[in-house]
Length: 127
Image 1 (cartoon, rainbow, N blue to C red):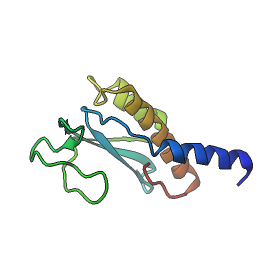
Image 2 (cartoon, one colour):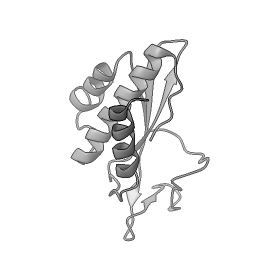
Image 3 (tube, rainbow, N blue to C red):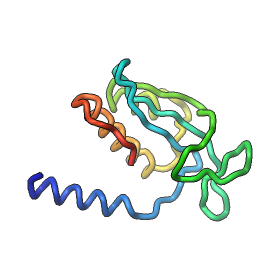
């Protein structure tokens, strides 16, 4: 990589380590459906407990940040581009399933990363 790319990667890696507040509106699992040419975003509801942890509204159990969790998505959103997916989630769904601006910005960045991976055939792993 060139120096600029190394600097950008370093900045992003460092920023990914910061603490973030969880959105009471829920969270998304983003993945690609390459056969259909789609960016997919499964939306899951949650409750934020007094410790700031996401809790399954049905079981009351804390939802782990890593590892496999068996939950049913509230809604599946799909789009051929990041912009199309953002329009569906933020403009066509009322009220939107996002309650925090930093979460909306994160999703926009992730949808762009997913779009680039879809275009160039590289692996997409949600940050």
